[in-house]
Structure formats: structure tokens, C-alpha cells
Amino acid sequence: MRPIDVARLSLQALQRYPLRTSMLLLAIAIGVAAVVTLTAVGEGARRYVNGQFTSLGTHLLIVLPGRAETGGGGIQGLLVGETARELTLEDTLAVGRSPRIKQVTPIVVGAGTASAGSRERDISIIGTSSHMLEIQHWSMGSGSFLPPGELDLAQPVCVLGDTVGRELFAPAPAVGQSLRIGTTRCRVAGVLAQQGLSGGFNVDETVIMPVASAQQLFDTSAVFRILAEASDGDAVQAAKRDIVSILKARHAGEEDVTVITQDALVATFDTIFNMITAGLAAIAAISLVVAGVLIMNVMLVAVSQRTAEIGLLKAIGARQRQIIGLFLTEAACLSLLGALVGLAIGGLGTWGLKLAFPVLDFAAPPWASAAAVGVAVVSGLLFGILPARRAAALDPVNALSQR
Amino acid sequence: MMELRGICREYKVGTEVVRALDHVDLTISPGEYVSIMGPSGSGKSTLLNLLGLLDRQNSGTYRLEGEDVSSLDDDALAEHRQRQIGFIFQFFHLVPRLSALENVELPLVLAGAAPKLRRERAVAVLESVGLKARLDHRPDQLSGGERQRVAIGRAIVMRPRYLLADEPTGNLDSRSGGEIIEIIEQLNRDGIALLVVTHDPIVGRRARRHLTLRDGKIVSDITGQSE
Image (cartoon, rainbow over all chains, first blue to last red; front, top):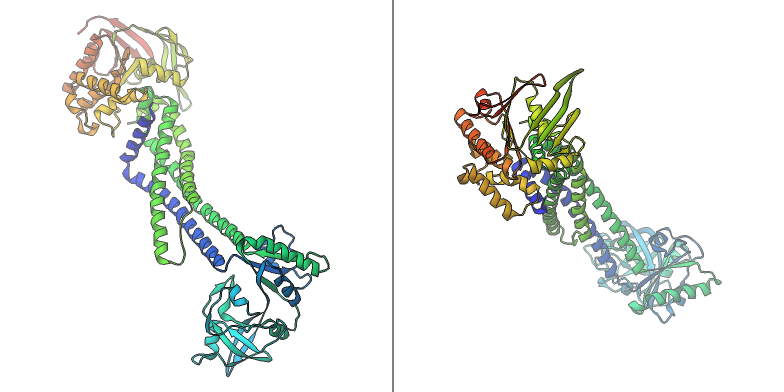
């Protein structure tokens, strides 16, 4: 039997039962569309996060105390931040002396309460230096950032995040006003433009002050992190080695710091989001298996409805293999057509999502679309085997005695 | 040549064993015209199905063209049906979604014939049964007699040696039935062996050889009194 005839006979059989065929097509199409749309969401989120990180600049290196034992450090080290030997302001200065480091800034973080006049607010506090503005690519809303100066000089100035500035001073301008944080006072030098989330941290609800002031406030001599910017993108790895060796020398030959590069961060998030996307695809693929079971049921009904026809095919010389082939082709055509319809619906859905959320760049990754079509066809074939075999095993005399 | 020796065919109906064929010996020569008659349940359809390799005996031997087909597997039997045997049924068994032409082409499609060849042969066959004007009609657009003529076309398009008809006129009025009988008798005159199972004595009498079955046994086998 020629393949084209097999396909033609199968399609004709599908045409004969339009309602049943369209219901099955719909079931498969929904499954495929779900895979396409959900992976498009996952991929959109991945691209968004990726974009956020790269907007920070990829020359960034983050130094944290303690040695992350897991190879490569990665996000775990950043989140857990084991307490080994503390980093200090002197460490920061030493790192900054490397020729491969363009600029460097320490970070001390904490929480506190800021008040101005009768208004009061809980805030996050970042103690850092004047280089922070450039390293983080922040921009000023009004006034100026922290003044340059020695790191250990606790100047009574601060810079407010957008929200903090508005909530404590609006409608009056915040710049030049006095702000009380805990027991200390500082003069507001400037307010940042609205930043939103940056690396998981809401800058808008933060007060930024000189690192020495923050250390006094929190009564510590430690530095939480050191941020360094490599002189250029190619120097990142060399800068990382520099930092490690400088700090090793300063820490009595012990390699007790972890340096995370932006690349590693981006790669980590990339991995996470790819896994989320794959997970979403897998969940959606379950609906394809359900559609496969549906195909099996409907095909079993079809076999009993077409018993006489199968008997006839046997009477005129059809081999078992040919009958199996006919029914499997029918299942494959169904799932393939359904998958194509599903791709179209999924494409429409993705387009709709783009219209609804223009910030996110939704796009189903090609592998997901290909896998969805593949799973649909394979599940159609697998679940078509049982009905096809049943058809092939029919006894021709009994089959023909049915009208 | 179809040769049956000591053929038995039994069915289990509940706990009872029904013997549909009981030690049947029968030889059908090429080009014969045989009618098989007998009351309901006498085993005549079982005999026809067995001769047509749709059914298998429980014991005895069946030699088709000298080959013992008793032990052949399903696919080998399918091949013999395809090449040597054409069937006509009481209820036509046309595929409803296919046109008359496509129904006739079906055996050739299964055999993998090229489209051009099978179309030529199917058209010629439909012409010979008087359906040249109905090639593209689907079965539901045809009368009963026309449907049976399509079925005859399908049965002979592979040029079989034997044409097996099970109540070919059972579902037709007498005029269409007569036309069908004339068509298959013409095929018989052209050399094909014709076996007709029928209830209808008028149809049965037309054959050259008359078999009568009762309770699974051949009770009479008379040759003569043609037409």
C-alpha cells in the first residue's frame, strides 16, 4: 500500500465524523497551545530578569566574606553569606588598588526608622560610598549623591530613595532638609530617581548614607559586601583573580572570600528560569497525554463503529499490518493537525500576552513548540496502538456480520 | 480447484457445541456455477466463508489450487483472498465515504497498485457492470442494485478465479436482483467460478450445480438442468 493512499484513506475517515474529529483536534490543540503559551511566559520572565541584570552592567563583581564551597559559588553563596572573617573598609581600599578595578565601593546594610518632623517610616539603610551611584547605574531625581571622601569619614549626609523622599517630605522638597535615623541626624543631599527593584532590592524604600555613618549606626566594623567594577568586560575574570589574591594576602593567606561575577549571576538566573520554563512545559504536556487517552477512547469507539468496514478490508485482502497502519495514521494525522492548530492558538495567546504586558518579551522557545508537537504526535501514536491492534485482530466473519 | 476433505467447523454457544459443518467433502472446479441452498443455520454461509478463507475449520483439510491452506497464517490467507477470491455480500459492505470508483479501487489500493493503473481498471470494471455514469457517486447516492453492482466491480477488479456471493439478491427487489444475477452469470461465462449462497429457489435453480445443506452436511449435490 502506498503511503499517500494510507494518508488519504485516513483523512477521509476523519472527514466523515466532523464533530468527533474537531473535538479531538481541540483537545490536542489546547494541550499544545498550553505548552506554547506557558513556556512563552517562562521565557518572557527569563528575558526580563536577564535584561534587568545586564542593565546593571556586566562588569560588576561582588565580594562576600566566606568561602562558598559549592563549585562556582553562584546564587547560594550570595543568599547564605556564611560568616567567616569579616571584610573591612581596608579590604575595600586594597581591592580598589588593583589596576583591573575601575572603582570599588563597600556596602553595609541594615534596617532602621527614619523620621522628619512628625513623619516616621521604616527604611532599609545602605552604607556605601560615592562610587555606588555609578556602579549601580542609578540616577538622581534631585540634589546630589553622597560626596566623595575618605571611606572612614562619617559625614552626616544621606540620599533618599524616591518613596522615602516623598513620604517623609512631600510636598516640600527633601533636599537640604534634616532627617533623623535612630540616634543620628543627617542632611538630605539628594533624592534618587525612581529605580524600582534592583537585584531584588527595593532602592526606592532605602536611605543611603556614607559607609562609616552606617557602621557607627549599626555599631560594626564589618562590611557586608564589596562591589567592584572591572575596568572592562574582558578584564572581569582577571579582576576576580586579582581580588581573591589581594584578599588572600590580607587574610593571612587564607582564601576566605567569594567573588561573584555578574555573568555567574545572570547564568544562575538563566538556569533557574529555564528550569521553570521546562517545568511549565512539562505540566502543560500532561494535558497532551490526557488528549492521547481521549484519542484512544474515541478510536476504540471508532473501531467498533467501523467493524463491518474492517471486516470488508480483511475480506478484500488487507493484511493486519495494513489495518494497524491505517488506524495509526488516523491517530497521527489527528494529533499532528491538532498540534498545528494548537501552535496557531498558542501563537495568538502569546501575541495577546504581549499586548497585555508590553514590558515582558513573551516568546515560546522553539524547543518548546517542537517538543509540544512531538509529544502530541507520539502520544497520539502510542494511544492509537491499542485500538489499531484491536481492529487488526477482528475476526472477519464476525466483523462482516455487522451492518 | 477448491478441495474440502472431512471439514468440521464447530462453534461454542454457551455450554453447547454447535457443529456448523459436519465432515464436509466438496470439490469445486474452475469455472463452475454452484448454488448453495438450505434452511437457516444449515451451515451454508459458514461453508462459503470457509471456502473464501475468511473462516477456518476445526478439522479436515482444505486445498486451494493444490496448496494446503489449513495451516497458513492470517496474512497468507489475506494474500490468497486478495489474489484469488472476490466476495459479494447481502449488505454490499461499501465504504460509505468513498465514491463508487474509490470503492472499486480499494483492493488495488491495498495491493499498492499505481494510481493510473488502478483507475483504468476500476473504470473498465464499472463500465462492464453498467455504472459508467455513476463513477463519482457515493453509496448513499446509489440505488440498492447499483450498490451491489459497485460491490461486484470491487469483487472482480483483482481478477479472481472464484466469486463468492452470500445472498447477493437478498436485499434487492426482484428486478434489480435479476440484473445482478445476470451480471454475475456473465462473469461466470467469462470463466470465473461462481458460488452463490441463497434462500431464493429461483436464483438457486439457475446454477448448473446445486448443493443442499442440512445440519452442516451436504444432503444433495446435483449437477444439471441449467437455466
